[in-house]
Image (cartoon, rainbow, N blue to C red; front, side, top):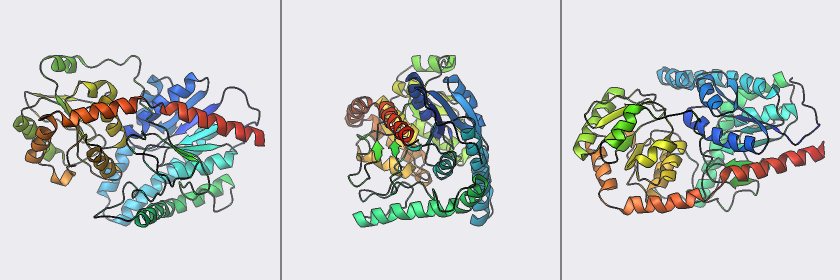
Length: 422
């Protein structure tokens, strides 16, 4: 079992943020980490090695988590059966548990954790005798007001249905992590039955990093669960946009953005769909290659790799994306209309929110995406001012939030309470 840190406290708190997944699961925590660091704390961000450069360029300490999320996606996709896919994920979680343990044992006074690794992070923090705090990018607590992100929805649902679905989702998460947590407890010397799932029923504090203007805080959430406002990704200080992109932006009217982030759909089909839709809609486009390695050809298309959406999106006339939490937030902050093309997990939830908020037409689930449907959606976005006007107003409200300040306040109170107990 890792040694417990000294109970002596100083004005400087050693904060560890733990996150796992794609770039969208990491980038928001660079901005949050910078704000905590500016308040005088020492901040380390534990993430997969492919994001080490991003973390360090933002001025934060990087602690390595094992595994590559892209290889995980590919391995689960190639698995011949659901049991084989579950085995792949279980092996990933085992390694992740070891990584979280090592990252926390390197020196930590308080642990902040994203939703994915939360069961592991809570157990490790408990083993070290340090406080922990959930920092979630999607709603992670059951409520009567809506079903949990990732839950299949068809037709009207009652408040009781929504609450039952949220509890069932957490139960499934607990089942998925059960074996891994059992083994991790044995290694940490902890009793069984602790930190079973990322739940808030036991009073564990959770901060949600999105705006209440986008998802209002449910009235039935416990008092320890908060909606703080977004944590915007930090832009590395030496980052500069590529010259060919700047030239393209200056050479004509505002283009549209098209990108699917960490999704790995049929690349060849998307090449053709995107190129034809851009041509039929009569627009210019910036296409982000992403994990699908998109590279459609066309005189009015420029292809880019990873770059800060916070810089790019304000230059766009509209954004077409997979409706991941981070990309959705960046588009809302920029005040531009969206065409959501959800694929899986929480993406249908955010796509539906964009439409409900009046900043996007009806979502286009990936199986329904064709050159015609995408061209029609783009014309709908750009054909009048209603979507842009609503997006502009919503952006104004979102920018008034100060999500990191709320997290800092809660963290300070949490560490102070633990210090008094010690």
